[in-house]
Image (cartoon, rainbow, N blue to C red; front, top):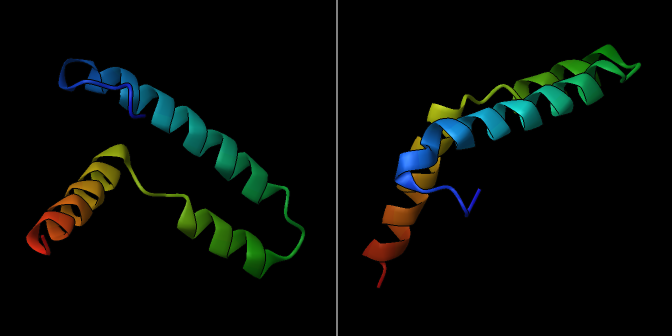
Length: 65
């Protein structure tokens, strides 16, 4: 994801979505319903939510300096 530039964000979103699909597929393989539910919850973040969380963390890091 580091290689993604502002002009290529749609490409980054594509790769992020692909990774999320793989993670969700792995969750669906879990036999225990509670584990499956927890796994799916952890892997439902959209790319836009991910970017916002990342920016929030980045701005918090610069505030401490």
